[in-house]
Each structure stands twice: as structure tokens, then as C-alpha cells.
Length: 385
Image (cartoon, rainbow, N blue to C red; front, side, top):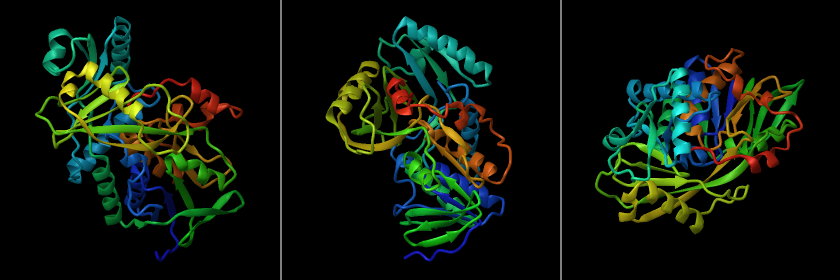
């Protein structure tokens, strides 16, 4: 059994955002506890994704967070020597119709106006960039600073950096309640005992409403399962992350291809299981834009749970009615990339500072208080991977 003690700040949730928030708080001399209910960090949404680190095709409100996070990923890799297979080989967003081509052209102009290096490519330039694309691909937007990493290795590395800075990580520790006095949390109650604290950071992703309910709140998102699969190893056929036709494909250092994607919505909820229909759908779509997939086989698939917001964007804010609690959730399948920037932002906010990364378009106040967010979810388009 863990031996708990009191801490200045308690971070609940051991994903990429929680581990990063804990790290940056500890860098400023705070006494931090990270509480994770699993036996290891990174076992849920943060570790069950394809590891995309993408600025391309980002919403204007979310692009500053993505761009800042890329710099932090570089910091963890280059300055702290993180061995988590982070490669910046680029992200290619594809168009297979003239309508999509026009949309990508307009988006490239918009992204360039926000300071991102994005290049609209087609024809021979596109074939040179990614020779094995299907002839059905007409054009693409290419961001050379985008890439991908191994999510499990990345989270465990950041957690180790946090430990080295003095963070205490309590594993197999389930939060069961939050003690309140005068609008402030005074203690985090767990199955291992109680931790008196001055502040709480909620980074539990799809489970954030379990924590919010402990202070009488509810956040506007819904849980939804996601799936992806990995192929047999094959000769090098792809360097970049490619996406289009509701599917994404990216290589691994071992020579496999990771494949995932969208389609008709899966039911909402926490059912973490693979379905043949969903995997078949994105396998077929993937082969349509990337024919080498026809020459290999899927050998393993897995599923995770996402927190889907009504507009597909993250929600980062202070918890209403609670003076000393901040949260981040609702990343809708794109939060691994933005995890470091979000963690840094939460660390600043819980210390009473104005975030250095703009989050005005990501705050809770963008939704009306009476929003029927389950109905909004049913209308929402598939989030870009």
C-alpha cells in the first residue's frame, strides 16, 4: 500500500497532460503529487493512440497550443535526451477531390498567416515527397515540422523527468472524493488515504466528469471509443504521417504501419473493444490512398477511449465554483500532440498566472450553460486524427 502524505498540488491523472503539468510545477519548486489509478502512467487515452504530433489542419483556436507543444516535444527530446522515437518527418493532409483541393489551398493560406510552415503541393512535387501515394490523391498540405512519437515511451519518460524534479507519483491510487471548505478543495481522498492539498489539477481525460462530479460539476464532453491497428513489418514505404479519406497511416521505427481512422460514429460510452467493421473500413480507405497497404496484413488492433467535446476542440479552464482547481479535457482524439503545452498551461493557471499560450478559444465559456452537448456531439463531424 502506498504511504500518502500532504502535497502543495495534486495532479489527478497520469497521461501526457498530467505528467507534463507535474513536471513544470516541480520545476518551479512546488511540492507535487501525481495520482494515477493504474499500475503505470500512460495506460489510457494518452498511451492508446498513434502518437501524432500535428500542427497541420489545426483549428485557429488550437494552433497556438499545437505550435507551442511541438517546441516542448523538441525540448524533451533534444535537451532532456528523451528516447521516445520522436521523428519530425512531416504531416501530409491529402485531397482526393477538387473540392478538397480548394479547401486545402485556403487552409494553407490561413495556417501560413498564423505563422506555421505549411506548403501546398501537388503533381510531381507531391510524388517526390511521398512516392507511394495513390493516383487518386490530387494535392496535399505538407507541414515539415510535424511528426509522431511512441506515446507510451514518451509519457513514461516525462514521468521520470517529473520524478527527478521531486514529483511523488502514487500508482494504483484511485480518487474517491474531494473535501471542500468555502469553495476550495482542502484534500483529495483516495483508496490509499487522504492527501491534504492547496490545489488540484484534473487531467483525467474521458473520466474528467467523475472528478468534476465530486465538486458538483459536469463538463460538456462525452466518452467515445476509438480503434487503430498495426501491420506486419515491411520494407520502407513511408516516412511521413499521411491522412485523408477519413483514415491515417504512419510508419514505426520497426517497419510496421499504424492505421486508424474514422467513419460512422461508434456509440458513446466506455466500451473498449475492437470491431471488425471499423477496422475493415479504415483498412479499405487506407489502401485507397496508400496502395502498399494491400501488400501487408493487420496483425494487432487495440482500442481506447476519447473525450469528445461538442466542437471537437479541447476545453481548458478553471473549474466553475472551485477556486483552486483547473482541468483539461475534450481533446477529441488530438490531445497527445498538445499535451505538453496543455500541461504547462495548467501549471501556470493553478499558480494564478495568465497562460503564456493563448487559450481564449478553448475555455469553457464558449459553450452556453444550457447546451445539450450529447445532441451537439451527434452533429459533430469526425475529428481529424
